[in-house]
Image (cartoon, rainbow, N blue to C red):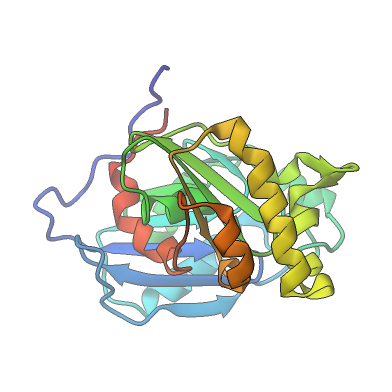
Length: 265
């Protein structure tokens, strides 16, 4: 496997610097400032994700949040979609008129495609910035760095990331793959279906997804995170297997520090 370029060098090698960690979702943008140990130095601030959301508005929103938090020396931003070396290949929510599942705006598709959002954020925040898929940042906060570890985040849709020996593997957009009768993973176990089915029936779907992905990845450990992971019923959790672990949603913030030590494979 050929290694991609390493992230921007850590601006605080003496481990005294602080990291602005930003978790961008379809419904909200949350941020805090953490020290080198991953301890928050301010309560997390959350604002609703504004729509329509061209790149400039996302940068301005994050900069506004940062201005109300303690100073930091670098930033980590996790956002939905496929991000390669800080450049947006595609993003599912931010190209819509009013948010997830609303009409896609062609002008926003053009604005986001190929956008060097890392450069935009570094200019807007005035500090080195790492931009990854939000599930990848979430995973950085929970993996142990041994074996094949898969992270699935359950929220508006399905987020995913996988790591081999602590090394971040190239991103796969599992969320857009068909899972049943042409229905994508996003549609099958996303928030709309959870609300429609209720936690019990939705949890059964989560189990089917886990069972279907197990022979594909042959993971050593699977982490289930995101805002809806806590809604999986105890009965379903008991049947998922000992190697499946539910992790706190706040890992999307805490992972902002550790993400700087990852190398994408």
